[in-house]
Image 1 (spheres, one colour):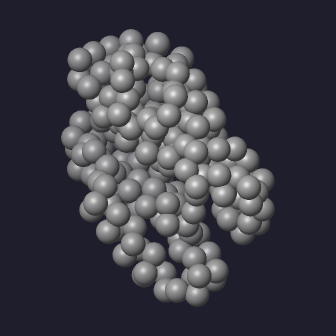
Image 2 (spheres, helix red, strand yellow; image 1 turned 90 degrees about the horizontal axis):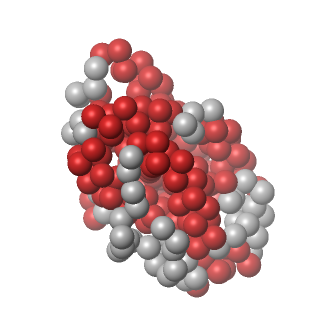
Amino acid sequence: MLRSQAYRELAAVQLLEQALTFMPHEEHARLRHQQHEEGAHLEAALTLWQSVAGASRQALVDTARARLQEKPLPLVRTPLDVAMAQFVFDRAGYFVLREYVSGSFAPYAQIAAAIVAEEEGHQDDGARTLIPLAHAQPREAQASFEVWFATSLLSFGRPGSDGDKLAVALGLKRRGAGAVMQEYVESLRPGLQAAGLRFPTRSPAAAGPLRL
């Protein structure tokens, strides 16, 4: 859990750092605030890792960096890419963490609850930003969505895997990855419709049945 959390938070911090290089100056304060939030989430994961695993914080950072090199997020080059990442990737992380809020590992459940509470405050920000950009650049928006959608599905892990079943059996999370992934997909539909976008006909990232 903590390795995955560190990967997601470090990826988000780096994505926002990329965005600052080309986003309009008036957006910088918002992006910096979000970057600070993601950095705080990473710090919480590192602190818990050190306490529970008895390993150094740097060891977890190094693991997250190595995974990012192996599985990097798509590059963001335009405001459209940033809006899409926030609409799709950030939302996926929110749905993943929600399952741990009432989990049996109380220290991680507390971290998850704090992050979910923050994310609930700006769940619709990505969609609001995305919709006008998608209408102005429909082809680019559809291509960007398909890339980020496939990436976002990886956040849930493989549905029905031994690790997925064990996490549910131990009470670490409420439901298996398949059910959470499907709920996430359903949550995207209103924003996609408003933006004039559609799900890809086939998603190579999805494992098992997924209703698109």
